[in-house]
Image (cartoon, rainbow, N blue to C red; front, side, top):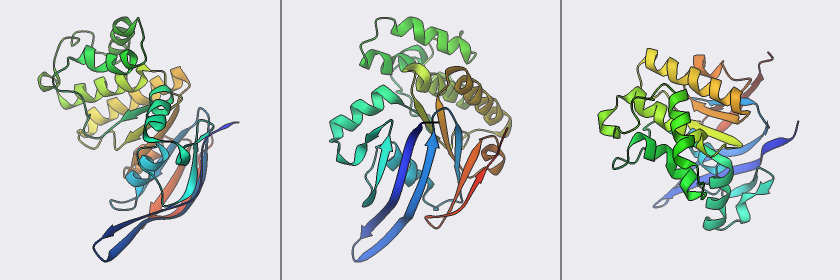
Length: 228
């Protein structure tokens, strides 16, 4: 299978005054097109930093990231933004919906940025798929946490991404609501053939993925494979 993400010899260090903290040490892994992949580890293990670098939101100090066939380390900020808009979807722990836009408008934003003439119709269909056909015109403040995350999931799939990064997608939800959101995420992922990368400290959630990578102290301590 072709590799959609290739990470080699990744290192990341942050400086605070005279103190330096290396948060990622010699990270190497690949992700194949269409697979589900979980990055797990305790708080402070470097999971979110690694996701940000893989998605082109941040840069490593050393090492390379090849995303969707492109080495992103040499791209400008604008070039990386174009790559993300075309190929990448995001789901965050804190939803990151625009408060002044309705659910429908939030989902339509990535499509409109791409110049889609059918942005509203596609957004309605996606919101229907996540069970929010009666919430089109509600603002985030009028929605529950679970409903906001379902809007975020619909938005993440709106540009038909090649790869979707989910950072602690159930972190702000109760167990039952979080379970429903995860089922939705995996079902939409299977339907669309998107590659799904989930960052989580939840081992039960990680076990739903085909493969897992475990971090501790910024180092890979285990790579496992679950065959279905």
